Length: 148
Image (tube, rainbow, N blue to C red; front, side, top):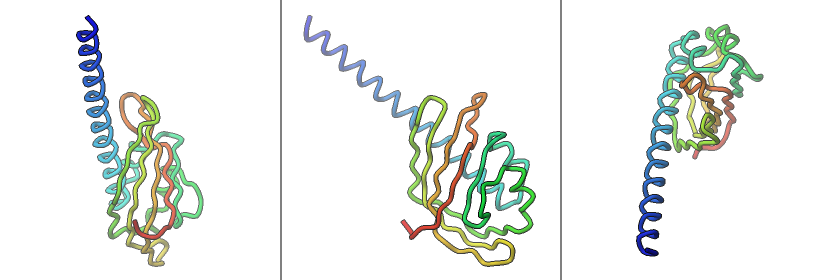
């Protein structure tokens, strides 16, 4: 009886671990896809896509904007932003709860803002929340740093 119980517990633990790994993998893929869409929206100056990706009260804080901006404020400043390259490295996703996750990464940024060249390494952290079964960006902060 004791061996059977132990076997059942071991199987249950294995299944729980496997399902948790699958859920984490799906979360990684979903958030990476959403972040890629956000980057494309910035590069293409697509304000509507940014509004769809962000929560209604979402904020983005970057060294070049100098203050927190909403999606509408960002769209108003698109003319001043020209992104040439914005690749990501060392991406990590950590679930904070069933509907909340933290994503961190290093990005390199090449382009210009208000006519001034911008070329730097950034550490990016973002908080994502699941609203109506869709992951949306609540807060993104970029901080200048040394490369990874």
